[in-house]
Structure formats: C-alpha cells, structure tokens
Image (spheres, rainbow, N blue to C red):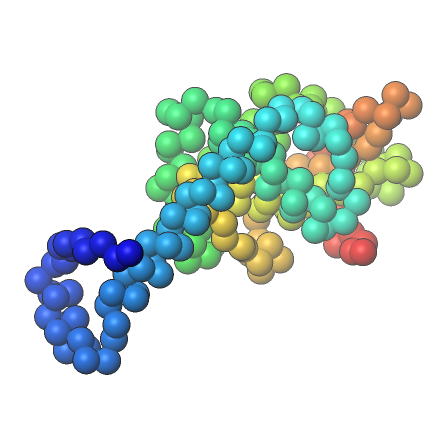
Length: 209
C-alpha cells in the first residue's frame, strides 16, 4: 500500500527539480533518503540502549596495544562521555561538526584543545595523571604510548553522538599537539595507570596487528 505525502521545497530548488523531472525519480529519491535517515535513528537508539557501561569500566577493560585498538577504545569512551554528560557541557562542541566533517585542520585542532581529553577524563574519575620526569627510554617495560589515535577516536565518539550517525576520520592525516606525552602502564594489581612526560619526542607509531 502506498501513501501520498506533500512536500515543501524552496523556490530555487523547485526550479532545479523542474529541469530534471523527466530524468530523476523524485519519489524514489525521497523514499531512499527518508529510509536512510530512519535507519540511522534506529541504529542510534539501539546503540544508546546497548551502551550502559561507565567510562571507568570501559577504560579498565583494556584494548590499547595497537593504534586501531586505541582509536576504537577512544571512540567508545567519547560516545559514552557525550551520552552521560550534561547537555550544556557537550552543546558547546556542536559548532565543530561542520569543520569535523570537512576535516578542517584548524577546527579539529580547536575542538581538541577545547576538549582537553586527558584532564577531562581525570575529572570524570577515569584515571589519575601521574607526572614523570624520566625519559621515554626509562619507561616501564610494559608501557604503551597513548597516541593521537585515542584522541581522534574520543572526538569522533562525541561527534557520533551529536550527529546521531557514524562517520570516519583518517586519524593519521591530521596533526594534533599535546603539551605532554602520555603512556599507559599496568601496575602489580593489573590496574591501568597513565603517566605523563614533558621530555623529548617519542615514537608515536606503535605496532599494528
């Protein structure tokens, strides 16, 4: 059974549609567009219901050994942060949606600076930053450099929530700067710790599986 609906379009768009009415099936285009948007909304609702872990639970579960794992973990944390944060707290980041989609390096950098992810997660009780004056050569043997793949994942998780859809960012194509280098280690109790270093540049390219 088919139902008829009435659509309103701007005058300029209507003129353009008239030019192509013999070539384009506007009814089909409308159906596909609406169907895609409804599917996105349904997927988003499902994702909201399924994601009931706390930020700390997600972090403690691990999964930081490779760049892709850090990106995935960051994205999960970013989505849950956006889901659980007060609306007024994340609304400020809506202004970066357009720049994020267009991969505007200036806008992405500003979004990253405004977020201050490391301090944000410390405030949320996910971890406690520990400052170290040692060089990277003296890091604990089990230390894993926390790269910008984690940052990009976290940022994309927020954007997924704000836009209610999924997008992808090529995390190695844009450069972000932190004021510190970060490393993740496990203590004797198998708990994660985050160490911060002010010292020289470290190799952010960790092994990929």
